[in-house]
Every structure is written in C-alpha cells, then in structure tokens.
Length: 368
Ligand code: SF4
Image (tube, rainbow, N blue to C red; front, side, top):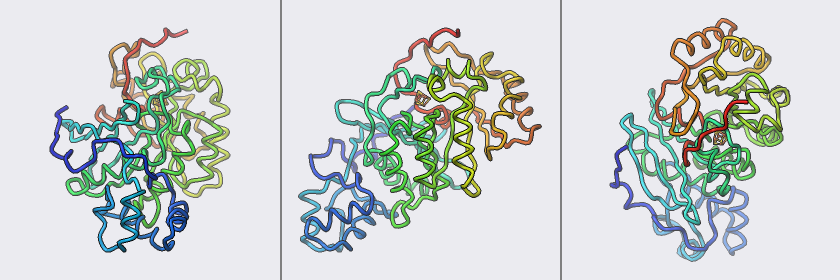
C-alpha cells in the first residue's frame, strides 16, 4: 500500500471538542435540538442538507453559506460537525482506498472505499473497535471488543469517504457494514446510522444498497429486519453445528436451525428481499461436496444469493484456502441445485466480506 497524504489537509485530524455531536442525531432529534435552542424547526432541514446533501458534507459551520447569522453562531458555539480523527489514507494497487480513523482512547478503525466497475463505488464501514465474536478465521475477532462506535462515528465514515473521493470516483452507491466489528452487536447505533444513510433529504442511498453483515445474532437480526428496509448478509461459513460451533462461536448460542428459522420468519413478509449468504471456503473444513449439498438444503426456502469467498491467509492462521478446483466444484453443486452463486476473487473486497481483518494475528484453536 502507498500512503497518499495529499488529501489530509482539508479534514480535521484532531478529536472534536466537547460539543453536541450533530451526526449522532436522526432527523427528528435534530429538529427538536434546533427548536430547543430557540430556532425554527425548519432550520433543521437546512442544516441536515449541509451535513449530508450531495457535494455538501460540511465539516464546520464556517463552510455553510446562506444561513442566518444567529443560527450560524449557534452552530459554531455548540455544534460538533465531526466524529472521528482522520489519521491516514492508503491507496492499494487495485484502486482500493483504506482510510484510517482515530477513535477516542488511542483506538483506530478502518474504512475501505472500493471503486467497482459500472460506476459503482462501495464503502465498507466499521461498527465497533474490535469484535467480541471470535470467529476463528478473522483477525479482528482476536482483538476482543474494545468499543461500540456511536451513530455519528459510523455515519462519519461515509461522509468523509464521500467528501474525499466523490469527485474522483463518482458518488458512493453502496455501503456494506463489513468492516471491523459485528454490526448487530451494536444494533441500536447501526440501525440509526443506516436510517440516516438512506434518508431522502441527505445521503439518500437506496436501502437495498446498504447491507449489514452479521455472524448470526438472532434477536438483533429480527430487530434489524423490522426497523430498516436495508439489505442483510449472513456470514454462514459452515453447514453443520459441529463445524460452525468451532469456527464461529456465536453458533453455540444461536445454532443453524435457530438462525435459519428466524431468517425465514423475518423475511417472509418482505417483498423482493434476498439474503446474501457469505461463505469463506476453508480447505478440508467446510468445502466438501457434502457441505455443498447440505448448504443447498439449509438455504432452501430463503430467497438468497450466495457469495463464495477465498480465505485470505494471515500470519498465525491455521486455515488454508480451498483450491480453485474445489471452489469450482462446490460452486457447480450449488448452481446445479438452482442457487444464485458468485465467486469473489481475492482483492480488497474479499477482506470486507470476511468482516474486519485488523488486529494482532493469533493462532486459532486446533479443530476438535
Ligand atoms: Fe467479528 Fe466479523 Fe471478524 Fe466474526 S468475522 S470476528 S463477526 S469482525
């Protein structure tokens, strides 16, 4: 990765002062705050558009033009426009950008911007510092959970990515919550952030272009399905409880039957809704043709797309990626059963699909 410092000057590099963090508020709350400060509610919409509107994304009250002096003064005195401290930007050879942000207490998170073909640009956001879920194939899981990100800290990742890269790459069209953390372990702030991202008068992403990925926290998954119209990806990665209990310990609490039953129930009333199942192929662990056949049975009755992912080996990992031949045979078994299947080549977005990959490498437990 090459470090490109040229864009850093325009953005704040310090943690924000102790003021009202504007991006923590959904629109109704912003309206109430504006009113409580003695201003007309209608000014909230003006502010909302400056915070989130196309080509606005202001980082301070000083950038706002055409508003009453007393309202601008209020924003200068009490409003905090930022939420994260920009620390660095890395540009990979394939065009993927990684933005490193500082969070309080010396922690950092990554946001990844992925230019795709056909005019699409995807931003992969983090939802936590670290992660409690301890998936055995993931760096981030070894860190443990350090902190939930606030609503503002999640939304800010998209706003800064838009501000930095929209001119060069075009508008951000997709957001995936597949960075650091289990989004549904921070469900309150993730739902609020997702709803801000799809708001018609602001960032205005299509709900089906905002995808939250979960390892399978069932109660939160139900809540997410009921409170947003956004897309859902489930990181599945195994077809038996025995294997999933080991590589994804969340399965010990919510096993495959519980997970799939909840999914079927929650999406039954959603029109044209498809679940994305993510499946990282690990040689000799979950990639047999018996696994492929079990997978077809598991997802039976769930409108879905399946993403087969290459495992990116990292220092300390005891897993090995499946061979190309095995991946193709696995894929063909799924296709023969009538499933919609995609195979992802190893590049920036493979990391995203496996959730965050930050953290210290630790050798996973041996298979039992
Ligand atoms: Fe957490 Fe996702 Fe990594 Fe699992 S794969 S440990 S849920 S970040």
